Structures are given as structure tokens and as C-alpha cells.
Amino acid sequence: MKKFLVLLIVAVLFIACDYASESVELKPDVEVVWVNPMGAVTYIGDTLAYAEIEEIHFVAENSVDCYLQKMVYEYYDADSNLFYGPTGMALYAKVEGKTDPYCVDTCIIEAVPIPLVPIRSTIPSGQAAQVLLNFIFVDEYYGENYDTVSVWFGVLMLPL
View (tube, rainbow, N blue to C red):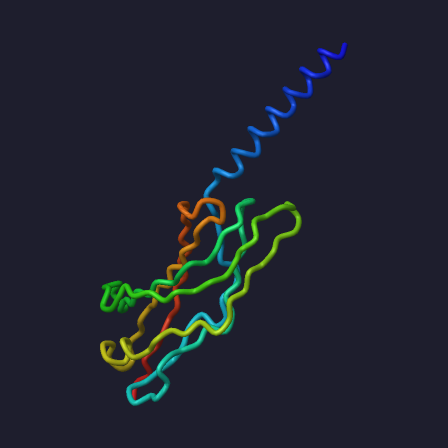
């Protein structure tokens, strides 16, 4: 009976360790759930150097803890032609992995600047531009698994 019990315990430990190793091998999976504001207005002669996104909320979709590593800007005109970038900015925030299916932790970053000078120097008055923000996350365990989350930010050039 003792041998059977020991064999059963070893089997349970083996299965538990196998499940634990699978969860460590998962890649980070992050989603943007809130962006405020989603756009800005500027004009030629405006003195503001950048528009500010007040808050961006990130939520993990799986159990992997990860870190926000950087944000990469790409600027597009109304015809979806790239006219500036990509250029990056280092950021840091920790996104806790999901441990409870009914409760999630939200990672909030605040005061994200979006440079407006490339838009004012390229886009004519009355036109719109789009800024693609790519947020790059790296896993906490090995630092080799990445996830990229993209958000569009709109900018309107007011006619004078």
C-alpha cells in the first residue's frame, strides 16, 4: 500500500511540474482596454511640442507577468503612407499576469507624449494624420518572449 501511495504522489508531482513548465513557456499576451484621449487637434503656428495621452490601460490576457519595454511611433498621412518614423521611446511598467479568470489587474501609464512637430511640418492644413503607437512587452521569466500591442492616435490639422 505504501509503494502505491508513493507512486501516486510521484505521478501527481510529475503532472504538476509539467503544467507549471507549460505556463512558464507561454508568451506574454497584453491588450489595450482604454486610451484617453484618442486624438488631438493642432494647427500651423501652434506652440505645443506634443499632445499628451492622459491614460492608457493595459490588461494581461494570460498568466504571464511581463514588462512594458518601449513604445515605437510611426506617423501616417490620410492615405496611409508612412511619412515619419519609426522612432522609439523607452518606457517601463509591469503588467501582472491574470491569476483569476473573474478579476484582472490593470496596468495604467499616464502622460504619454506624442510629438506634433513631424505632423505640423508635413501635413497640410485641413488634413488628418495618424500615429501608430506600438507598445512592446517582454516576459518576466526569460526576457526573450515579446508581445506588441498597437494603438492608433489621430491628429487633425485645423485649417487657418
